[in-house]
View 1 (cartoon, rainbow, N blue to C red):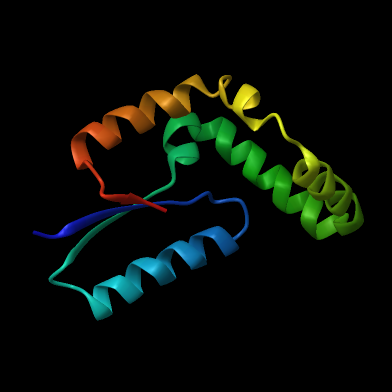
View 2 (view 1 turned 30 degrees about the vertical axis):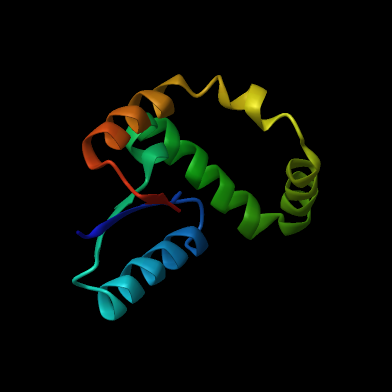
Length: 109
């Protein structure tokens, strides 16, 4: 039976997407008969135009003020209350739960 692998990405910059596609493509090459892979950007699916606005704002900040982004990045890296913050993302959870129910992944990356 094929292992089901769900790969989640976020379109903020191309690094997450490149890494996600790389994992997907590598699995297709080395284990095509043993894996079924689904790649999803739940932020784009759940938040549509708002996600696009945030994504473009992120890219503008990174490209025009990399030091400012560095400050934000270090602040985010030190945060410890992500569980509490995540509760606010109801649309994201509303998309994620049905995906898990439908695809039934063995692994989520």
